Image 1: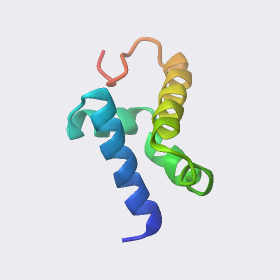
Image 2: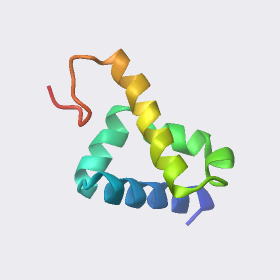
Image 3: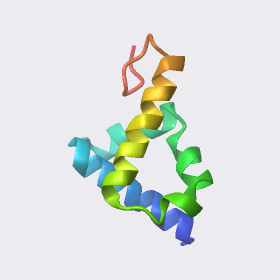
Image 4: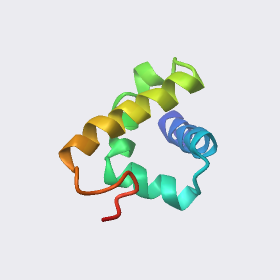
Length: 78
């Protein structure tokens, strides 16, 4: 598995634990707000940061994306 792939899994697991979500919920959230692409494209800078920074950064990214989709909640459900 690539380093980027391992890092994606790391981010999912840390986010899931921090937010008390299931894997399915995190997957839906990451898909809805295109977090997979964001993490992958920012791998070089994100993988050098700590767990708390990554979780906070994902939250900020979701907040910004949510502004684009205000009629949906953070899990992509209407």
